[in-house]
Length: 495
Image 1 (cartoon, rainbow, N blue to C red):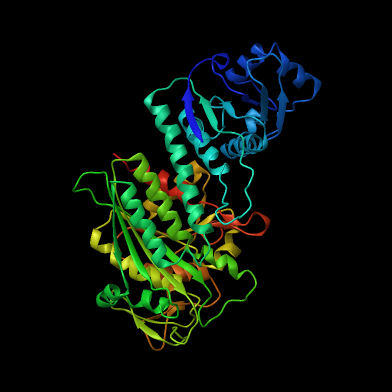
Image 2 (cartoon, rainbow, N blue to C red):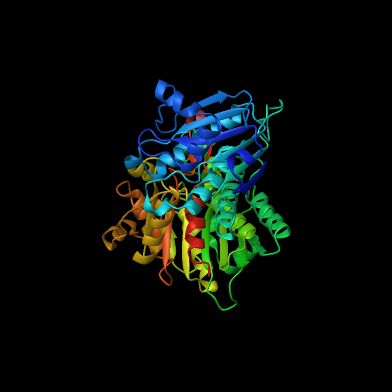
């Protein structure tokens, strides 16, 4: 797919299809006025006749005769005084859906002057960023393992209109496109079946990224190296599988040599049976998505490598497969973590925190500015927040607020849960320094409490993406979240 930006007049840009926005109530944007003039008042006539309502995300696709374009798509953008950035995202998603199934080979999208309502998103740069991201995200398909040839969309070129082609607007549009590609890479990794996507395969993807981008360096620790270091909790999770665990480290050095890196830590459980604490069989196929945290780290690093911001970033992924064979960890086992504390494994299905705790200890060697870990960690987070918001817990208010703000700006929203010391006692063990579960009450919070014990020496936040990393049901598939949130957060610190 070819994407570009233009500031030419609508009629001076060749395209099979023109896309414009029409408000349900309020002033028309200049691009819609220009299109109506070029079409001899057709849009106004259709609106007056009631054929175009302007209702948010409504789509009207109209063939044109002897006009500058062969087809016109009018998307409703709602009422000016009620419009939010979420409405704009919904309208853009509807547009891409119409383009995917339509006959046009190329399209001119004139929506960068459509007001969003939200102050944070109400700039042309923000809108162009979102247009780029939604285009890449919504044009995504995953057909790698289908034997029948799928009908590809006829669309092969999209031009976005802007008021100018300044570096600032180009950079915003290109960052949006790159973010969409990062989301799609995250989705590719998540959707790959677990007989292909295992810890060693994930490590190979990191090595491939280092070959593709000169700015990325990669180090892989195998099980022998981890054993020598004392990463016993990662090893304990992987003991029941024929697929050996891996610790994957990727570094991007775009800032000054002395600048502390921002660290991303991802849970990479490439398949989770629950181990000896076996999960129910129904829906277990979706446990291939238990590496969603690591996949989002990969996607974010891809965006960083493509856009080359002036910032240092280090990524650590703890990858293992949780299987129940004769060598698997048992409920009641006690293991020593990398930082020397001991854990009583009461439930082998609470394995994500076990691989993450050693990774959180390991990342201290980089003296990070901040550490953000992400994991499909607890079903309790889905009960608490559903599938709309990522759970956020942190030991630092400033970091938490920055991540929440990034989520609001991008629509990749998070909601903060408490991390009070009151919850820590739920992890008490009679036989070890701590247990790996704290019972059913506040399951998301006690999981974060466990992780917090390994993140005391730096500013840290935990993102529980169990409800947001993938969709179930008919639309089953990885979502690419929280890549937009992470990219926005990191870019806000690029110098």
